[in-house]
Image (spheres, rainbow, N blue to C red):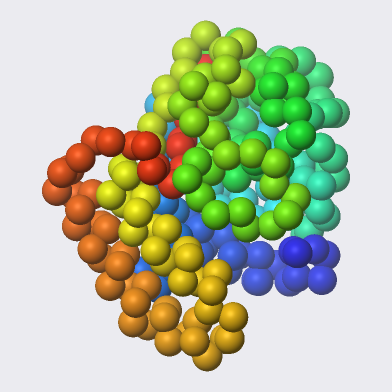
Length: 235
């Protein structure tokens, strides 16, 4: 768990590992593509002096993508860190309606017992025309016991039904998802740090490079084994 005992430098390192993941990271394929998608979508959000809400904002990996356009950046999380402004739940946002231009929620909707309620809350606090950018796990291992859900396209569309425009994109195809599962599985079963460290400099990079090559070749658009989905939802 990441809490107040983590230094600002450690939190920034965790954020950097998500924004610009190393090829040795077992989740490299999904993290790399997620950063690309979010960067592109942020570029489509009009205006400057943006009011931004980061749900699950203990690290804030995508904040640097907004730095020159920020008016206010508020991070809410159930866990207090040096970067969190408000300790609270995404299903009960303590903000007024029509407050934010942009809401970022990556890797948090898996934790909400009532994700439809969380989406309704986001919709309420967004200004008209405001945007939600989110990422959710699909064919992905359970990382902690607190997780409740994995999402398919139809489930994600159901949750985002209050929004006027929704775009859903797989972070990787089934080919990339299969490669990611290989690395994630090995990382889970490598109980000893020595073994995990060996995988990080041998197997993980090779599998990531293979997956990256397969994704670039666009051999398949099948997303039945997509590891994660990104979504843009406009109010």
